[in-house]
Length: 322
Image (cartoon, rainbow, N blue to C red; front, top):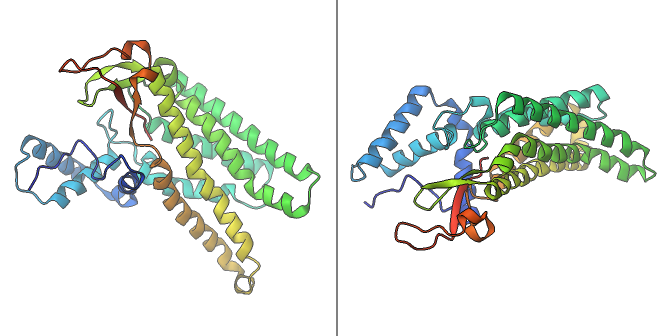
């Protein structure tokens, strides 16, 4: 049996389908039930195999161990990510938040509360899953948190107050009100990512060669990483905050639901959960976690590098985070 390269994901990252399959593993909620002892056993198996690639071992056992480690441990620090803020816990953590923000006819207090809760969770996820080569201190995190929450609440309240005053038909106005949560979350979520990870843009993040040799920090890579994560966040939220309310609008007038109004809430939760479980790996798979840039588009200090054999290095790699 050929040796397995555990430095790379199981599925090819050069295709969207390969990345999608990889992130299905990373976001698998079943990994949340892995104990600390099981995690250490998985890390030990992987380490032992790397030292003895010829050892007899079931490939599926190796890949299962790698799945546990990839979904639990931060690739930059090697430390476990706090459980509620692992990407495998994204759906359970956000289920209550999304359901709350889709509450019909919310009051200003309700909007403010759910936007505050949502942006607080976003701060935690962005911080826990960021590139850790340029960490933020407590003061920088606090400033980013306050800025993100303030902008989110302002946008949400502003949109909610503005739409009812528009001089448009009732049906279009009703539809726009359904889409207000998405517009607010998408805009505020993007601001949140850029504020929480702004230091990666201003100071740069570690970039490395194909042989995993760090050659410095790049601001261009930092901007690319943060931008890609921001796009992924919007793509994650879009189906979750748009599809369920539109589907519910279609089915709530059916005779079936008219006769069984108590089913409306569980159906709503089911739609949200199903959409989020599908949207999350699909959205973060748009970009590979280990992304790259051509050196020609980076800072001058990276444009004349050579490898071990003296050949020009034309591409460098970075961890964009999740």
